[in-house]
Amino acid sequence: MIADHAAVPRWGVEPPDVDVSGRTFGVVGGDCSVTRRWARQIARLGRPCWQVDAAGDAGALDAALRDATVGLRVLIAGPEADVLAAAARCRAAGLADAELTLFATSARERRIYCAHCATTSIVDAQVEDVAPCGGCGRCLLVFAHLSARSGSYLAFQADAEDVG
Ligand SMILES: [Zn+2]
Image (cartoon, rainbow, N blue to C red; front, side):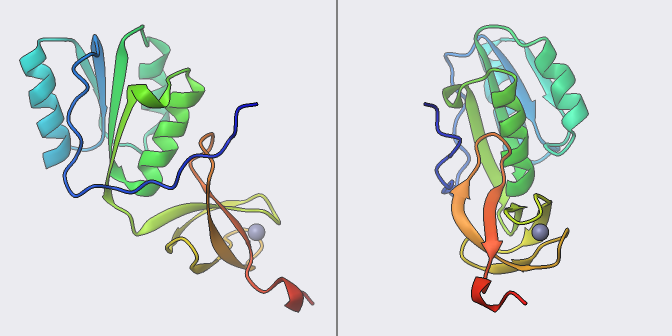
């Protein structure tokens, strides 16, 4: 059984280095110090590299992944909610976690999945904070349970005993 459950990421202060075992690379994220650093490292390796401008641009990423070849390494930088969603698209396209390099430039916003109405919302909340559901309006507690498939955190009503 494959668990649809990823470890809650702990982001380092410094972005990780490029995996030099890659044969081709994709860099996903806007023009920032992180993506420029990765692009420089890949240029030194002299291997092909495509770029998608924003981690949140799902269509552009899916198009790039359609041409994915063996030995592809994808590096993704941006707000955590976008990075996790882009990583989920890469996994859906067949990439393994070891082929992904992720770095969140900010981790204030999270994508949460409401267990009650199945709406995914982007909220400004940490794990174990309470945030409103964009679908049903319930106050949801954000759990440290991250879906590898969707890149969203599971959230349940915070005060279930008070349901009216
Ligand atoms: Zn809801």
